[in-house]
Amino acid sequence: MTTPWDTTSEQLLRELAPQVLGAVARRFRDFVSAEDAVQEAMIAAFTQWPQQGIPDNPRGWLIQVASRRLTDQARSEIARRERETAVAMEAEIMAPAVDIESDMDPDDTLILLFMCCHPALTSSSAIALTLRAVGGLTTAEIANAFLVPEATMAQRISRAKQSIKVSGVPFRLPSPQERAERLPAVLHVLYLIFNEGYASSVGAHLQRLDLAREAIRLTRCAKTLLPGNEEVAGLLALMLLTDARRAARTGPDEELVPLTKQDRTLWDQGEISEGIELLTAALSKGSVGLYQLQAAIAAVHDEAARVEDTDWPQILALYQLLKRVSPSPMVTLNHAIAAAMVHGPSKGLELLRTLDTDAQLAGHYRLDAVRAHLLEMTGDYEGAIKHYRIAASRTTSIPEQNYLMTQAARLGDNPGGSYKKAAAPSHGHDPME
Amino acid sequence: MKYILMMNTMKAGQGIPQWPGRDLQAHIAFMKNLNKELRDSGELVSAEGLAFPDQACLVRAGKNGAPITDGVFPESKEFLAGFWIVDVDSPERAYAIAARASAAPGPGGTPLNMPIEVRPVMSGPPPEML
Image (tube, rainbow over all chains, first blue to last red; front, side, top):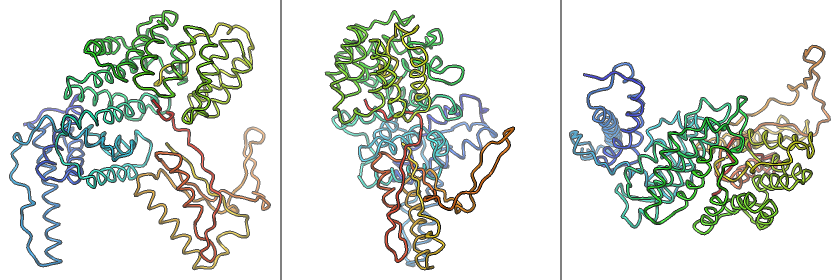
């Protein structure tokens, strides 16, 4: 008996992936091999289920296929050793009979999430492994999303698993204290997946897997598993409130449309209300963190029906708070923009000068992009053109480069003309914009 | 982040074809090994060697857009011999790979210390910095 494959089936299969991996990893006490075996079972399901239908117990099917794979491997390993040493190995490493339901543990997905976002990994490795082991994506899909060959991505994932093995993390839920310490790293990985997807969802990359949507799905899942955590809720709210603007963010020729020029009727009101609801609930609980504050800033932008309705004093207050909770040069940069919008461009430029000596930000294109905008607001078009051009030469994003060069050309063609009243700067006020 | 590492050969006439067999083999083995290392580390996006400069020509659009081809001039000092595109975690890592490639063995096994030009590939999102 089977159920026909439809559009929701792929989602179901992906959600099963971490649960199946948890069951198999615990039974075989080997995360590295179990992860490979589950990947093979997933690929088998993706090939067979659309034609043959979904089996009655899809989870059991996947566990069976992955377990068989591991058992076969163990057998051939024993055979190899027997040939070499002529000593019979005990069959202990073979899997016991499958008892599917007793193997299920709802915490498995959470265990895997903490494992894949292990501090021993670089962020690119943690991202790749999280997408495969927790997200249930195939290596080919992940490779395609990051525009690298499949073999390269396979190696990256395999090395990530080796690092985890070497670090000796057991397959169990970290203690509450450990969880609290390591949660920021987990959230950061989810944030990076979203950022990668959102920033690259421009132009020629439409064929790529939607990483922003994948990050939202994983963060939703993390929120269900960690219901009392306001920062997880804040991160999910931030993603939704940012993703809501996606359709307005690119023009007909795939050019970037800054927040100030977006057609706000294209914003996804469903995502906005869900984000605001999540955020309101999280903020009412007390401790305010980095993601909740960023989400709050995104919400203020989203709530303005017209750009001139933007509540800049509130954004400024939120940046001041963010500067205290989680200071970074990028926050200072955004704070400078908000200050310019409330107190005038010279106030913003004054704050920017404090960043000129910052090792992380000096020479970064965003500093020049923001300076260019603020100079334009003061009427210093020559200075603005100069900094737009510097910013254009420093960015590594083609859509952003085109945008910045266009700004410089606009001022050059029309010096002091019809653009005297510059709107809010479009670069930097939102780290995801 | 992705970087391209461009390897420029020395002047024509002092190039690889003139090396003794043993040195040539050592050089080829070094390059193969480097590519394998980059594949195994999950960093290699692509690696290509280019045909010798005498296979190259310069093309310009002529009347009606028809191609006008011209030879590459032998007095050119440097030629692009090949390139790697790597996907790495930091610019420092890209420089380290470039330094490895630069020190490929030349005649007598002496490191060539070739200039390798390293440039970011325009790859979409800027590094996230919050």
